[in-house]
Image (cartoon, rainbow, N blue to C red; front, side, top):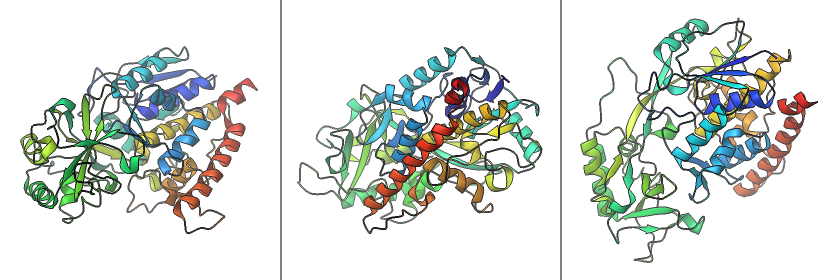
Length: 443
């Protein structure tokens, strides 16, 4: 069996390598860390999560929950690692980041068919089956090589990271633990703001000093991950209808819904570290302490990690790549996976790696690549990537807008999504039964 080369030891690369191994295909996995690091990574572990520790909802009536359910039916390896390292996060799949990365690293390094090479790979061989999954922080040398192959200019935007504070540094009596509408128990720390507090917080965000961008770089924020100060500039009530929305929460002290609520989510299994939900920021560190300190619960908060911004790169998929993530001309054995292809989100990147891994096995067997039907969330994302407007192309998360309308119409959104989810899961199971590389190998 032809050996597959995977470049990048992030979520997509690790999933691709493990899926190739499931199909009986040997893999060489290249990861440049620790020899060369990035502005966002902190360890040399494979599958390190650098932004949030949440893989979002597990409810199949939610797009992210449906995507996970589909991946579960596709024997997704990293989803199993996430479940193993799960921590309480309401209806979301939250993970202990260190435990998750350790699980992924152990799983990859202990797989006999996978050889891990810790060095930067800056070139690709057209005769080798290769998956490039180097993510949003692809090295400059490899980026230049990709540009040469694709003839497409690099696009850049900024992915903002939320601060993390110590749980024991919160002000007593200024917060309470609960999930929205009581779902999931007491998994979130809720920090209420009355109208005057909220107005002062918004004013401070707008007036605060962010770290400047390089003059040669464009500001291309992804709408799904806007810095909180950017959201505040869009209008006084933007945050109240966004990450600080009080819907589904009742302050036990007053018995009423607060004007606004800043939520904190566990960052680790012990609950000693808390992530400020939706508070991605590029403010200077001193301003982060000052501005977030206006929230009474965070008045004396100890910041364990400040919010920051790092560069993301992605390819203009509709013009650069074919339906399977391959260059449109001349490179039939080269595939791209993960955030480079224009998917946005942890689970979406894992999904992209899984599909690339399955198709790498098919290429090695002399077969054509394949994709799940559009009725699935996986297929819907791939359909978007190849059909989106190339001029306004932006990365995409899983959402029900990617799927065809349900056969049974209903005004009830949950019923409509339930019908779409049922159809999607039936379709992904049928596709998996026909295309699973492990089953095909055994057969």
